[in-house]
Amino acid sequence: MDISMKTIARIHSDFPEKFGIPRQSGLVEVLEASVVFEPEYRNPAALCGLEGYSHIWLLWQFSQAVRDTWSPTVHPPRLGGNRHMGVFATRSPFRPNPLGLSSVRLLGIEKNTQWGVFLRVAGADLMDGTPIYDIKPYLPYTDSHPEASGGFGEASAGYGLEVVFAEELLAQVPAAKREALRGILAQDPRPSYQNDPERIYGVAFGRQNIRFRVSGSVLTVCEVQEYTGAREKDGRFKPGEG
Image 1 (cartoon, rainbow, N blue to C red):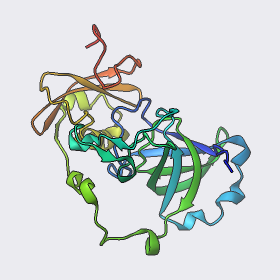
Image 2 (image 1 turned 180 degrees about the vertical axis):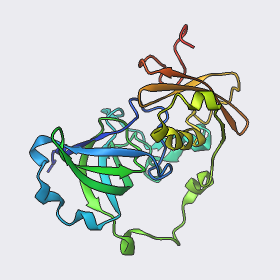
Image 3 (image 1 turned 90 degrees about the vertical axis):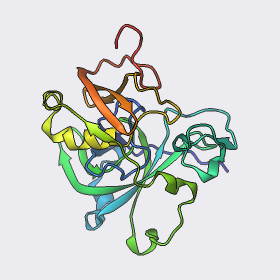
């Protein structure tokens, strides 16, 4: 029997586009977002007891990757985009069911007149507006396995770029978002198969476009612009806009 999934909430984050979102939850711990419930689920009683947990699980939809077909193999970006792996050995969005799972830190349960009760979280890897299907508490005694092996995914552990961000450019970014932005850039938003040091990329973060180049292990921010929504899928600016 097929079961229809109900959207209980949506994430409100600083990512209006997929490009630049950390590839896993928790990689940028200072990255904050809000889980805003749909009107019919804005019942404080549903959150009773959640305040006692430091972390929660979010079950959500890869809303920009929904398709009618699927492939048993995918190309993990951290493997250079040229190696096939089984889809169930990856966290690729291109799955039979486009479901994502994220472990995030619960910063607080809050309430305002616009959203009613909502959750403030940190470390989320979701695009703004992503539908959330369920929320569950993270249980350290059973959900944490420090001795677990990470397969080929361990090759990405500890990966990071040196970020060069001139003070005059950094000053254009709201102070509260600077540390998170540095963390996002250090994770290297580019597709792994692209390594042109002259190519300019752009990450949409909040209301700004952060333009950068990467040479070797150093990412250099070139310009901070107002976000207009005009960019290619791989993060390059459209002709005439770079």
